[in-house]
Image (cartoon, rainbow, N blue to C red):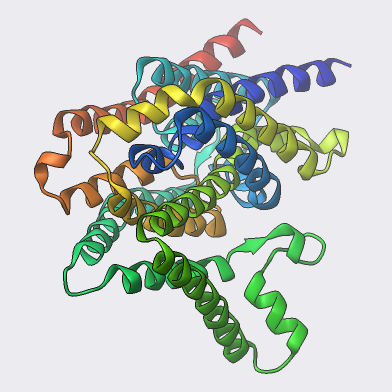
Amino acid sequence: MASLAILLVAAGASLFMAWAIGAGSSGSTPFAPAVGANAISVMRAGFVVGILGLAGAVFQGANVTEAVGQELIRGVTLSPVAAVVGLTTAAILVAFGVFAGYPIATAFTVTGAVVGVGLALGGDPAWAKYRQIAALWLAVPFVGGGIAYATARFLRSEGVPERLAVPALGGVVGIILANVEFVFLGSAGEQSSIAASIATAIGGPPLALLALVSLALAALAAAALWWDVRENGNRGQRHFLLVLGGLVAFSAGGSQVGLAIGPLVPLLGPFDLPIVVVLIGGGIGLLIGSWTGAPRMIKAISQDYSSLGPRRSIAALIPSFAIAQTAVFFGIPVSFNEIIVSAIVGSGYAAGNSAVSKEKMLKTVAAWVGSLVLALGVSYGAFTAVDTLL
């Protein structure tokens, strides 16, 4: 009975964390560029991103969830008290960022909190996993910002007609989407992509069929966009922008839910709960956060960082989708605030430095670094104090 009570307390802390993430990174960042380009209203964006985030959490959330719960510390298993302390510490810091108007990097905060309580438990640092995480975190601003900058320049180029540029980018997104893995496409306990599933059903050389199916799906996406842009260029851009926002919102759910419920994974063994039940619970927490708290952060990201038009918004969302799916595939906790903000800044520089708020960016980077250090220190000290009292 005592263990069940502690699990319920930990689940409550996890739900609070899911709400904070939904109100912050996963709820605000996916549609922020679309809102900045006036393609969708703030309130409608918060509603849609909540639904898509829930779907992403259920269909893609397992990889990051297991990484956060089991791979950030070695030699010990997180105790119920450690899970509660870590989740509560991270959630308070993220919630503070939401109400203060600064996008605290959730992956930095949760990772720091989990590592902090793990070290306080006597665990050993998981250096191999830390190197993998650090490599992605450091690469995101340069890769995401660089691709966004190049894409924005491509869309603004006078030598490339818009009726061809937008469908070409749609084809690139189609290739990525064709190779995104989903739980419902794989066998029990496995995941598979649309392209892999079709290739397996057809039979034949796996790599050749995978490439052909990917190209076929890319061609369909490009053709649909070409027709839409030909009918009405501005409308076609808005439609593409909204689709990209939806894909990023789905990816956010698959990535960010693991930050909320990952610390619960070590506690599930005695209760024989399937991971999908926990993913649904975390996804609902994200949805509630998106509906109740996301509008404030959507406004902050869409208007305060860069003056965005449809082209620069498209340029920001394409690398965001690709990076998010890379993180989900490898089970790496990553901050959507870092992904989106870096891409927005990169696309903003394509229009000149005046389109980017440098002061806001410096404060944001300081908040990211500070959240990692603060979460680690506070969670370590809090757990040590609680453990001493108990």
